[in-house]
Length: 294
Image (cartoon, rainbow, N blue to C red; front, side):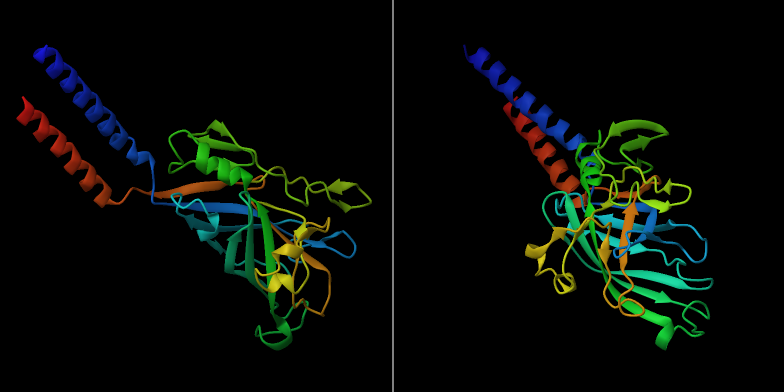
């Protein structure tokens, strides 16, 4: 009977130790921080006419943009992401457009509101400035409401967690060139907008892990986060900017990340070493206890 008890206890301890060690060996799939390089589309829809502003440099309705962002997947609130946008040209040849993140807040589980400062600097072009000062430089307040369902699903459900080299494109996660995970990415609000009435050409955005919505608010509420209770769907893609050139030109800004392009994982910071030291110590204690019992 004594031997039976000893066998049972030994078996139990062995199973507990195995489960614990198994749990520790799965930790490398966790990460303290994940960094993306992303590409996307910058589109200005006119909320007065419903049309699209063309890029004065390229003559196209869509402006390719890129940047990076970093977030901690251990914190479920995506408002902790740090988003950077590479400056790009939009107004005229030689102009520089910069978007600087001011603040971000998650509104509901799959909606993210980001507030940016927008600076359109026109060097001797449309606005007639040669030094990015005075009439040639416009500092504007811009808000973006993103539907981040696709990004959220990629973070939460990708097998083994997101890894370096993984690509989020449209509504799929790609690893090693092979689609491994479908994600329910939203369709950007500007998808399907006719930008050439003569030819019937329309914007074909496709799904995006971070898609601009038609959620908007009053000018007052967009200055901060206090006015969320008055948010509503105005049916126009993006959100109107404050302080536009000329006063009120009807600019409604869209920034779709991963729309037809990609979000690529460039770095995954592993779990801090302290976690492994703690785990190794516990494994050692299990071993000492088993030897003493024997």
